[in-house]
Length: 263
Image 1 (cartoon, rainbow, N blue to C red):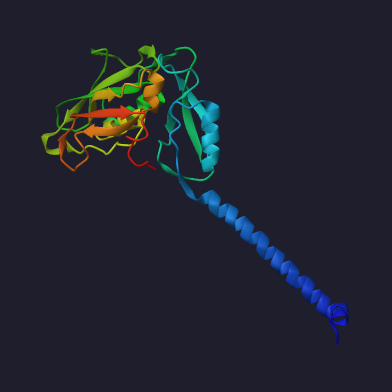
Image 2 (image 1 turned 120 degrees about the vertical axis):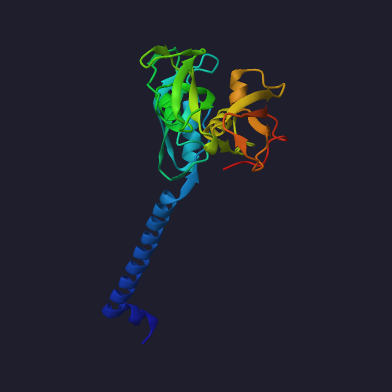
C-alpha cells in the first residue's frame, strides 16, 4: 500500500486526526500551566518610595503585581502625588498578581485623629499610627515589667490624648516599657536599603535612628528618599544592643558606594 492510499484510508485518517488533537491539547495545557505557574511564583516587592503613581504601576507590572492607592498623607517637603509608604513592604515576597497598597503624598494637608496607643505593643502601635497616616518618632524606654508595652504617647514632647486632630504625617513618640531581663536586641543590616525603609527596619528592632549623614549631592527631601544606606554604626555584627539604642546611618546616591542590591 502506497502513502497516498494509506492516508485515504478513513481509519488511518481518523487516527492521525485524533493524534493531532491530543498533541494540540497537550500544547494548550502546557501553555496554561506555564501561565498559572508564573502567576503563582513569588516575587520581591519593589521599593515604590518617591515614585509617581504611573512609575509605580510600571515597576509593578514588570514584576507581575499590581498597585492601588489606599490612603494619603501630607508630607510638606515631599513632591505631591509621590508614593510615601506601601504595604507589603519593599522586599517582601508575594505571589504574582498580588495588590500592593500605596499611601501617597496628598496635595494639601489633612487632619487625622490620634489613636489610643497606651497598652499596645510597640509594633501594634506603629501599625496603628501608619494606618492613621501618622508616623513613629522616637522610642523612649523606661523601666517596666512589660518590654515594648506602650505607656505614653507624645507629640512635640507633650502627652497627646487619643482623639486629638493632627496633620497627617505628624510624628508620635512612644514611651515604652523595658524589662531588664528582656532588654536586648540587635542592629539589622540596612545597607542597600532606601532611607525610609532603613528607618522602618531599625524601628522594628526596637532601636532609634541616630545621626543621619547624607552625601553632599543629596540636597532635597526628594533626594533623601531615593538615597541608599552604604554604612551604619553600629554594624550588624551580632553584637547585642540595649533596646532604644541609636543606629547612625550614612546615605548616598552614588552607585559606586551602594552595596550589592538587596531583594
